[in-house]
Image (cartoon, helix red, strand yellow):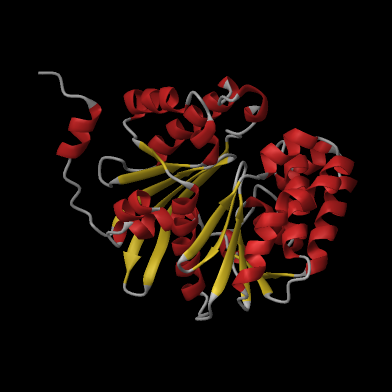
Length: 318
C-alpha cells in the first residue's frame, strides 16, 4: 500500500497544542511564524519572511511566473530548515494571486510532494477575518480596547473591515503598479481604483484605523530610521501614522536611486511601495480616525484561529 502525503499528515499526532507554524503566502510576501498560545493572548516565538512577488506578471499572463515560483520554493526550503515541522503542526494559506492564477493547483501539488506542506487557498473575506484576528491580538497587547477598522493592502487584493463586517477589493500594490507603471498614471487612477473601498471604509466610522501589510510598516520603519535589514516589528507596531507621512514617504523614495532604495526598503520594492502609498493616501483622505500601524496580520491570524479551534470554520464559512 502506498501512503500519500495527506494520509501521512493525518496520521501524524502533534502533541503540542499551544504552538503552531502559521504560513501566509501573499501575492507579494511569504511570511511564517511559530505562534504560541499564552494566558494573555498569542505571541510569535519565531518569524521569517521573504519577498517572493507571486503577483508579478499576473496581469499579463494569468499565471504565477517561473521566477516567482522559484523564489517561493527557495523561501519554503529556508523555512523548512529554520522551523521544526516534525514537532509542530503547520497551517498554510494562500491569497489573491493564487485565487486567480491558472497554475496554482499545479504549484501547490508540487509543494506537497517536495515539502509536505498543504496550502489552503482562502477567500478574500476569510483573509480579512483572519487578518482581523491577528490585528486584534496585537491591539490587545498594546493595551488598547477600542473598536477599530483594518486596512490590509496586499500585492493583488486589499481587505478592509471591522469585527463581523469584512470586504475584499481587487486592487493591490503589484497589480496596480504593473497596470499603470508610471507615477502620473498611478496618480490619475488611484482615486478610481479605491472608490468602492473608500465608501465602505467611510461607513465603518471607528476611532482607530489599523494599517497592516508592507506599505504602512515600511513607512513606519523609515520614519523610525530603520531599513529593510534591521526592520523590527516590535518597534513598528503601535506607530501612529500621520496624514503627511504618506507624501513624505513617496518623496523620500523618489529622491533615492534604485540601489539606495533597495537598501532602505528592500530589493525591487521602491515602485510597488509608491503605488501602495498612493492607494493608501486615497483611502485615508478625509478620515478623522487615528491611524495605527501594526506588523501583525494574516500570518498571526492563521495561528490564532487554529489555536482557538476556529480556523476550519472561518475558511469554510467566509
